[in-house]
Image (tube, rainbow, N blue to C red; front, side):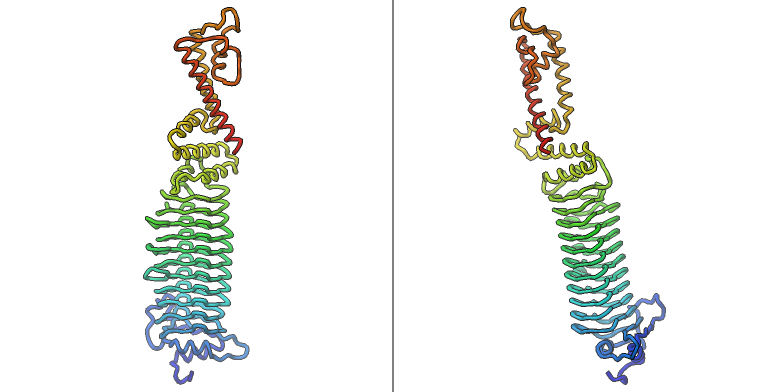
Length: 482
């Protein structure tokens, strides 16, 4: 490009480029880039393109484009180009979109700039991409991008019309996706991306009420996924996501009324925490997810959950079983035996056998609701007598009560002996035990024959004794098999 065609500002930038010198035309650091006006602060996109692709260099210097506070007119089209110099266009106002599809460069810093859109599909950067504090009205398209260092989106504002505000699907990032306090009107797409470091969305605000707020299905994260304080309007989807460390929704607000607010089916992480999060507005789907620890208070979970196949080792905070069982009973899939077994196992894992038995009892009671009426009757009998084997002391209580009742009944009216002058001396408590215990024979039942009402009472004790013995045996069998 002929130097006579350049404006004074363009000439300054052209001369500074070979030395990597910075040109700053801001009035002050707090200036809003969208308000930049005047020819003296305007750079044509074609000049920037010519400089990046054909600019000169000086011996012993590292060429770089470093401009702050300029107004850039025209479409800066760098698609499918190889740029060997760092690009730093900070606090600038782009009148038209920046086109970087298929481009390769060393570093790109647009911090504090305002743009209509950023198209950078399959972009390759051998350094960092910095969009800190950017204002981008349209979409940031980084699908299939390869960023060897991190992506910085902290305090950026993306999107205005819904859809996808940020697309990082199938991207590879060599360090962190750093986006605390990010604000988007539109969803964030991270599906099938690979991030070596962390994904940080702390205190981000994402609004996409008619779709996915965050789609991170099959995302792989090398350290942690931090969404503490996230406000998400729309579905947060972590289906098949793998995180080496923890996933945090501490103090988060997840909202998608009438749909799935949090979908983490088949997700894997060491810990999932929703500590101090607001109650989730919408369904939660955790089918076949796997965590070592889940940290969440019962009131965080919504009315509808799906827990089939969910596995974990421990739940925090430590709470009585009754506070956790209520969630299992709200499962939209109905009675899910595995969910009860998993909860019981978590209590046994920390040595809390009493709460583990309480969960097992709740499981049998929930199962009973799915049975036909005649099977329910047998279930009620097992429940009342021995608590399905998980309340064995109940059998002793029943036995003691019936023993006292029989002792009084037969003690006040002794049954006549079958043969006068033969047999043992009558003993009311032992006679009652002989009726109640179907296997043990004390010789009393065969020696005396009650009549009238007492005869019918004997039949009742024998029947109850057999029922108790059967239910106790069933409970013991269930306990041993467990």
